[in-house]
Image (cartoon, rainbow, N blue to C red; front, side):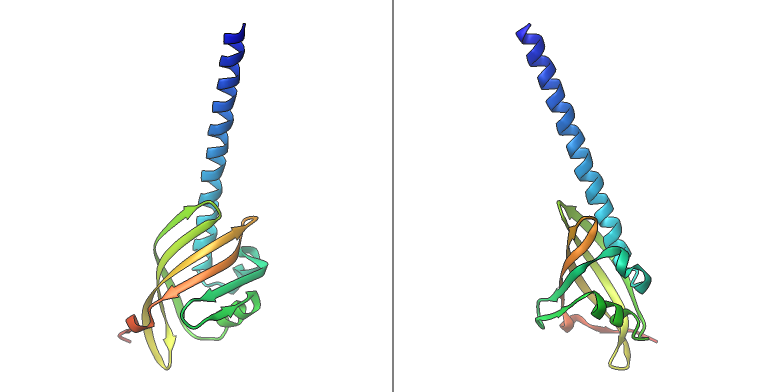
Length: 141
């Protein structure tokens, strides 16, 4: 009888553990999809993908921005498009390596960037942005 109870409890624990791991993988995949949506640079997505208390941080300039600053950036009339190289998700974090092509000081330029996005309840709560402005490449028109 003890062996049967032990076997039953062991099987239940294995099932629960596998179920929780599946949920975590599913959540990480959803976070990656939302992170990719961020890089569509569509102002219509902002309220759906950023928390109300969202904060973005740029490590070099110590520049920070909030949800409304981001909306202004996306609607300022300047050309910008992102191309994602890859994304990695772990827990509540998604790391994204991307190229951004945009207008800057009258020229079209391309630079490489990294975002580390922290999620809360299925939305981006925080971004740490790293980019190398020394690697800005002037694009052919």
